[in-house]
Image (tube, rainbow, N blue to C red):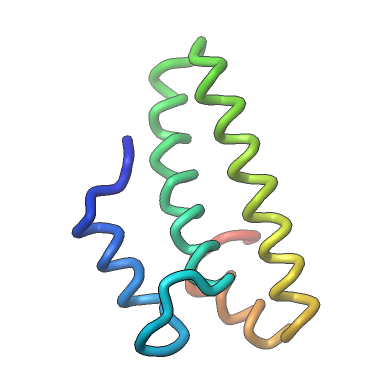
Length: 89
């Protein structure tokens, strides 16, 4: 259910803004999206796991706030990011 170090590093390499980037808003959204996707799959098979459902909703809220921040800063970057991630479709 959680990301391995290799998978996380691959996402960092894909979505980092500059070479030493480890925590930009774009990267945080990409990591949250991957975690949300995995947790959604878990919840499809474990329908009564309400603790994980609460965590999922918190992650979705955090991603929504980060996306609103990116949209406020630069709309072109926001559009490019949601297209790359395949969300808000």
